[in-house]
Image 1 (cartoon, rainbow, N blue to C red):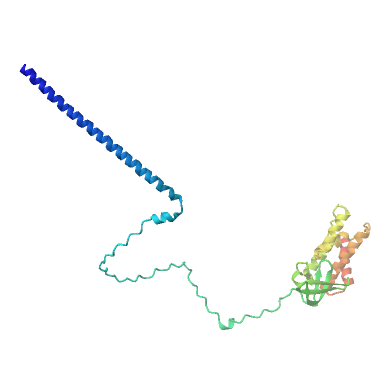
Image 2 (image 1 turned 180 degrees about the vertical axis):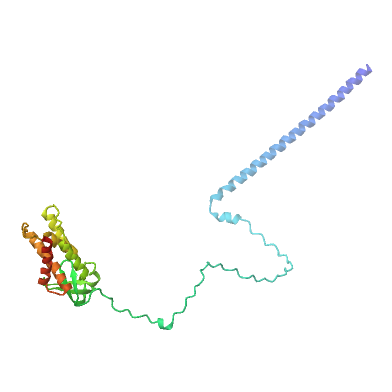
Length: 287
């Protein structure tokens, strides 16, 4: 019995201690809830205070400038001992790279006598005054004068050529005389060669007369003595041959006169004598 009572007293003391512990935990939890509620209320109040302060930020920037904290005073300069100044060392100037130039060639000094440029004389002309020449379209003519004329603002030097047979005076620029086919009289060997051509056989093409007449005209106006001799040979008619047409006779007479004038000028005879000589070579061919 005694032991049973002891056990019951022990259980009673244990239950009382448990009750006290439960009360303590309850009070502790209540105090914790109260502190949490206070902190949350305090946070809500701070948020409510902060919200109306953010609204006037959209206004003029003067308030924002007013809220900028004043600049802090500069810290007092701490006096340090001066550093030793090292003297500046002068550097040599940078070398300027120049482009590679070719080596200068030494030109020998000209002699003093060569300083004065020689005077350029008048241009040497191929033909002289009073000289007999052959112009392709007109035959033998004589240069009577060389004069300078201004044409269209440009100065030109001209040959003045007279053709006595045709009673014609022609002006030819000296710079274009050879281009126009103007030449000197034929020499003696060329005259002999032309006479041999007259002895040859006539070479008449079997084409229409109009075409042959054009070819004969071109040969006569070429100014070539051999070509003119060929025309005389081809158009000549002997006694037993058919007569020439009117156009054939005209071309023959023109070619004969051109050839006879040049022969007369080279051999220094008159034109009738030269015509007889040419016709004599043609009759020898026929015989």
